[in-house]
Every structure is written in C-alpha cells, then in structure tokens.
Length: 342
Image: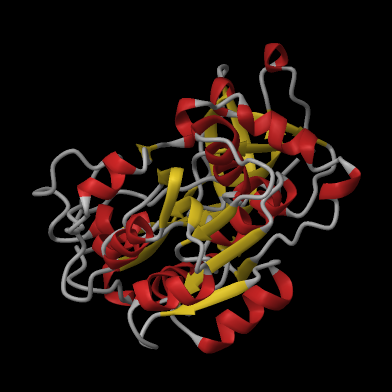
C-alpha cells in the first residue's frame, strides 16, 4: 500500500522546441495519484527510456511534418516513452500481482495508470533494464526478420554507439558476421566501440569522407548495412556494396538531429546502377512489424554465447533529469540507450 498523501509527478510539454530541446520546453507538474479503475493497472515506474524521436515530436516543425511514425505532441501533453515499473494494483483477471515488473508505454512520470493489455509482464526479477528498454530487440529483429546475417558477412552500422547501433554490431557478430564496422562522431566513442562493443573498425565523421574511410576499412566491400543515419553514410555504403548486399534502413538521424530544425527528410544521392548491377536489397524496416520477436530476444539472452553481451546505456537519476537526458541524447553526448531511473 502507498502512503495516503503521496502524489504523482510528470513532465509536460510547455512550449515547442526550436533546434535542440532546452529546459524551457518542459514543465514538471505534481498531481494526485491516478484514481483506481477496475480495468487499469497502477504502476510505479522504476526506469523509462528517453528517445531521440521525442525531439521531432515536440518541435515547432512537428505539426507540419506529415507521415512521421510518431504523433506530434501538443502543448500541455505529458511526454511518454517505454517504461518499466512495478505493479501497485491490478485487476484480478490481468494475472498481475503487486510487485510484478511490467513494461508499458508511459514513461516521463512517476506513476502510470495502464490498460492491462498494454502491460508486458516481466516477472518478479529482471535483467539489466537496458535489455528490455534498449533497442537490442530492434536490432535483433532487423537482422533476423528484416534481413538475415550470413556467416562471413562484412557489416557496416551507422551511428554505432547509439541506442540501436551499440547493439547491432554485437548481434551481427553473434549471428555469424566476420567483420563489423561502425561509424560515430567522436574519438572517445570510437575507442569505446572497439573495446566494448566488438567492432573491428570505426569510422569517424570529420576525419575525411565516409566513403574513403569505409573503403579503407572494407576494401573488398560490405555485405550488410544497418542504417540509422541516412545521408552521406547511406551514399557511402552503396558505393562499397558487394554483390547481393542487404541494406536495412532503421532511421534517419541526419534529418532528426539536423542543427537548425528536426525533419523527416534526409536527402541522399545514390548510384542506382550499383543497386541494379550488384543486386542490392534496400529495405526500410520497423521492429513493430514483428512484435513477437521481443520475447525471442529475451529468450536468446539466456544462450551461453549471448550472456556476455554489453547493454550500453547512459543512466540519469530522477524524473527532473529527463530533459537533460534528452538534450544529451540529441547532442550525441550519451552512449547507448538513454534511461532515467526513478
């Protein structure tokens, strides 16, 4: 049972962002606890994810950008993202009991009232929260359902230190890749990627063209490209494609994190003859196409060859740290998935 005088706190959008998010865009509000409802699960959040996509959702351009996969936020909306919490109260028919960990979509608040159908039961104990809230399962789905890794593949991952890329390189290796290359924007991240994330080679923005660096790292070409950036990196990957290469597009950070404004447009010039002559597969993919893969991912982590996988994360403490966590994620200061602990 909770103390009678306990309140809920949540973070709301107070004004739209222009460029990078800043503290003036947010308001921390205190509210009564959500009222008990027969069909709702009351959850005390323990961790929630902070995603770069939030920048586009809260930006001044959000309402003008049509077709984005995330709905634009309105002034006064409570921000939201995937969260892990513990059940306080639950309907009997939900099968949940107090103390159970569940994953649900209502982060950026201390308590959440959630439909039982939106709760993913995680049991009484969990792994590292980054195993669930991170994008390991996104990368795993992309490399097993979107395309398939083959033994001996050379794999290039853009944004290799980010939430998806920090997992994609490790997963590709465990699925049979013989060489894994990742890109990043900082020398310290490049060193970390080679030491901790199993990358054989790294490419750094600003140290020559991406194409020239990729040619040096993979002179015989690449078989798989996991693209989270778009733009110049996609162009370079096409120039280094081997026959029957498989490219899977998961994001376009070059658009979402553009300095002046966030957008969904990431222009790129691609040599289409290379795609045709070499029989290259270029596929856009969302892990939401295969939600059943989440449970397979969690099961896979129990395999002996996968138990040493590194769940890269940047952890921030306290609800009021979430705006800074978002700013750090968007500016490239954070590594891996960005989490806030409550």
